[in-house]
Image 1 (cartoon, helix red, strand yellow):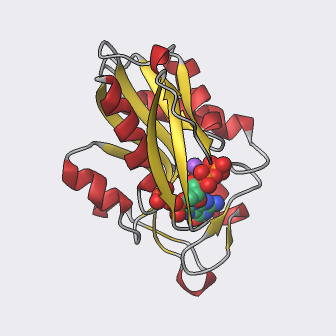
Image 2 (cartoon, helix red, strand yellow):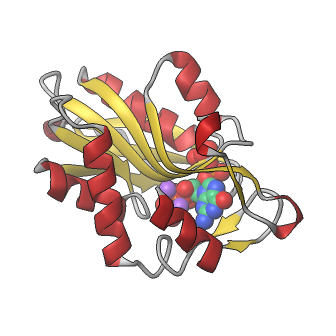
Length: 194
Ligand code: G4P
Ligand code: NA
Ligand code: NA
């Protein structure tokens, strides 16, 4: 998605060889015009698949998801993160390890919001090592719902998440695919390589 790549080039800050800061439009301050176009792009890429619900995770997955949900006219359900979780049987839960924060989090979704009738599109802001996506997949699987695909705003190709998810057989659509963040520079994967 050209506009997103331009925005990353203009405003993204390479913090290290593996972390890109995009808090001017995605992770802190939000750019609603860009988010709206991101929503339209997800809707286009997953058109005609019979998707009934979008599932994401708080907090940064919510903005792109709600714009996609508006475009696709489906509800958006966000998994919540909880550090300690007393056993509650009205929840689907999974545990997600964050490499960035080096901590394990429980994520959960209320059972009443997802069942085997649903066809789900999973959306998140970043795909790095894939732990968040795998956690969301686990929650959706518990509900018996079908997973139509995974939509990602920014994929870091040099980390293993995307490859892993595609290998399992999921359709992963990433709107910007970053090949490298080496030497303080953002290098995108060329379209012809995709
Ligand atoms: P993973 O889920 O792909 O395995 O990645 P990881 O555990 O490393 O990611 C933890 C958090 O960091 C996630 O957000 C993820 O979206 C984000 N993240 C991963 N790589 C980058 C990056 O290069 N830049 C930025 N800005 N974020 C990155 P989170 O902790 O769930 O936070 P939030 O959704 O509340 O923003
Ligand atoms: Na996220
Ligand atoms: Na994030």
